[in-house]
Length: 330
Image (cartoon, rainbow, N blue to C red; front, side, top):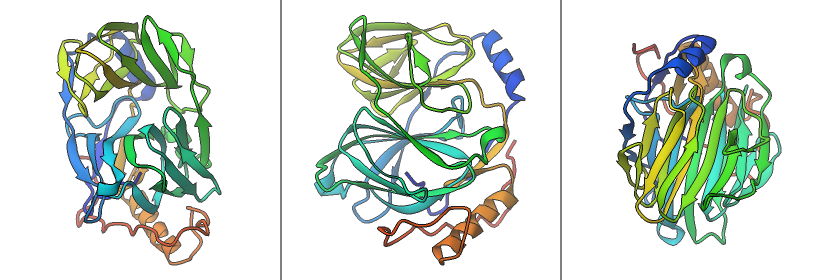
């Protein structure tokens, strides 16, 4: 999914050396849970589909390497027009598409043409550069899901672009339904490629208390999709994300009736990065170069983003860069 803000915020994400960050995280004393409430962002057009965005947040820009969380639906496609995101670029990140209802057609400049379906992960690695489009399918009447971005560490950010699909098996753990799509959780793992230690899992409970061991070196974000839950004593409703700092060995959730949530986690990234529009880089000049190359690609010139699929009839223009240089904000 693209960030369709006409004037996207610059996000500077600073941290320690990754090894130091992981070591300090494991030894940390947990801080109180932090509730991150979503802001509504329209995805363009007069009948824009609105998403609820919790990351990036000025107070909480990252959870591990997770750097972008859009939660949407359930939306009546007849009323909103569904998802209609024309070709657009990415660098320095992975996109993780996860649906609860509906289907999305994906095309990208590596030649992949795939369908995103509920309970199946589509992970696109942008690396040095890729472009893709996302459209809800013609037979989708209700669209409901999340779009997630993962920042690539410096050692991997220029890796070749690629695409992986994985359909995790649903497992029952003490009456709780779990699908692990990235990393490992409750003894179940995903084979999908990650470049930093990560966790991504869907958890559904009919109610009551849910408790699970978690890696104390990880920070976690629990995103509530349906229902109301008390996460480590903090009440969260649909669209809310509860941030949990490193140092915890267990995750405790009290569900007020049926609840569905995503558990996202990872070791602190520990790197300084700049995220602007759909690009992740390290400097203003890198971001400016990515933008210029995308505009050249739209004009039919060769670029880092590859050849456009024949099916594309339009692509998204890049917003104007801010007047000031993209610099760290402290």
